[in-house]
Length: 406
Image 1: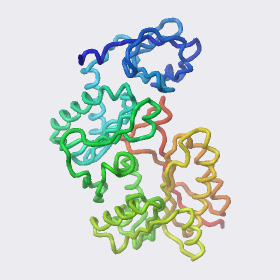
Image 2: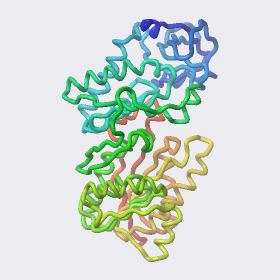
Image 3: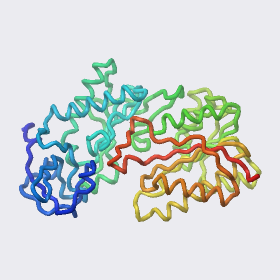
Image 4: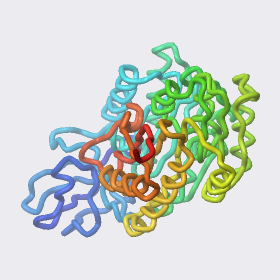
């Protein structure tokens, strides 16, 4: 029965002139690119993809419920997709992390960027959190997790437990129900990790996404050198990660702001864990409402950090998102002391680097501030950017020195 998982049950033929993204190295075939589908089987089964003239384009997983009709697994016509194939993909993903990041806590599998489409696996100390967003790859979940358990154990990092966070709304677009829960034995879902010398409690069951935003790991480290002796404002602090990096670097005082009472309580707990409660404080408030009040009070900070949620998750909402990013950067810039620093980012891939840069420049001009770029950064290497997959290039992170117009 297991072998049936690897049966190729369909042949998908592209329309003439279509598949441009696929041919450029992408991994998706959309429904409107397909001329014909021969064969059957259940959704999620393997399908061979051919160009209009019959040239083999590779093998992927097929789902008639999804606009992304095929998610490619291999472009090689002579490759057989089986358990060994999947295990080698998983091994390659883990070996890459071992060479590029601190693996005490990291993203081990990042979907398409690791050629394992629709699957995300995060490691928090000895706990794995899996998120499955593709019907086809969901069928291979056990093979992927068994391989990870084996490879991590070989490196002296045995896995204590696995939690599934497949509760994202996007699963419904694949015709799948949302799900979260333990895979195997239950354990305390509050997991302590250490990153950049900062301790955190991560709630893998109820935290955002898989429990913690690992992609900003080295961006958080980058702000440490700016914060010794500084007054710092961390906006959209979530569970306090940037604020705590500022605090552990020796900031004189830090204010973290988030709209979520639950997140702020967890941030306060994290401050206690690090012995920073005297200098790092948090408040639950709407950032857009609070910043004008701080400006009216005459407050100014040596460092202001803006780490907002994605203001757009669709191309059609980009214009409105630009207004949001421009507004928050204008308000943040007004609170930076002359010669101080602004760290600002966008985590929406629809907000391209060019568009984000233009928006920041417009904000600075509007409030009569001049910017001197210190750094431009992207996600940590455990969230690799696959050049043929635009959606993997989502996080843009700038650090500027802010000067008043002379």
